[in-house]
Length: 110
Image (cartoon, rainbow, N blue to C red):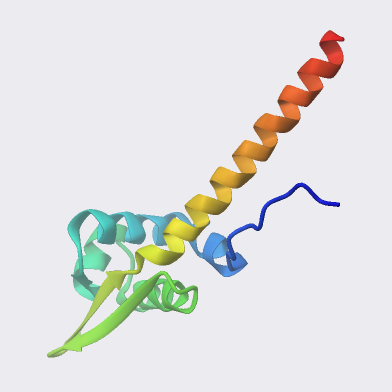
């Protein structure tokens, strides 16, 4: 019988998307300053428009951002739900790690 509680469902693409420094900077910018145009994102990560569009599309596929057209620009908004699930997942991992270290410490001390 397992003592593990149900873990939040976290898509590995989320961690893959956040593993790139430019994509992580995009997410931080959107969290701090709110919805931003592609041009504003380019200013943050200082890459070509084509490269920025690729990063934004990968973030969208991972479920981390959504976009909407406003005139000639596309405006990007962060989705906080996947980030909250990832945070819950990592918190659970940390708790299990802490529990394992406590068991090891108790074993060594006995």
